[in-house]
Image (cartoon, rainbow, N blue to C red):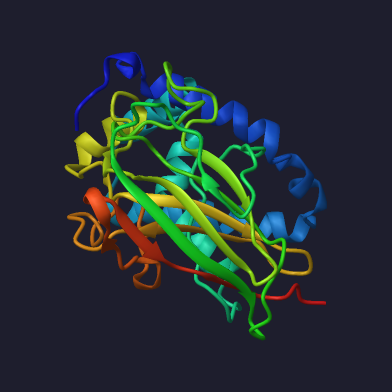
Length: 288
């Protein structure tokens, strides 16, 4: 992966700190804790701790290993990498459980780099990007419908993705604030058209605590190329997804375990080396 000189100063610590601050600003996590019955907290806490205890007993974890883990956990917090760690290695299971009832489109993890409030571009337009933005031009068309087949006029499609160097605006220096982030609104027939660039595969940050875990375990840090999207409409469940490209070397071993067959696009070559894709969404009504 090449590194642009404008973004070479990006670090895992800086990215992690931004992700932590964004999460604390946007998610109001402590509201969920206050609304969760003590019995539920007791059950989950005991079972998580029990699983840790069982691992220690089964594998005869030593004090040296325990202290290494303790030091690493402390460093994860100091690096601000808890959002990265949890979103990469835990969120895909939470998403699977939370959406198993759905009849409509499949979703996947949000990841740590979502930012609400991206610029609006109507039903047809381009995401904000630099004049010299590198990457293959991509035109994406689709429709948003309910599971009944009814077009969802006014459905909101939020798109964000990394640039050709694997960096996300607002989480790396040198990038315009809303670079490769945009919001779109479906027409009366539920249709939309978005122009952007095809993103490249990238590695998650490896110079912080998560990178130390990856190196120690002998894992790779790659995510396949993907587009992030949130789709919402009144009276329907919000869908969060990532869309992937066929042939990517890491579709089958994504570090975040987020790839699903239903989310792989079928691109077609267009004029001048551009790419077009057609992919729509089916939203589930909110259950009473």
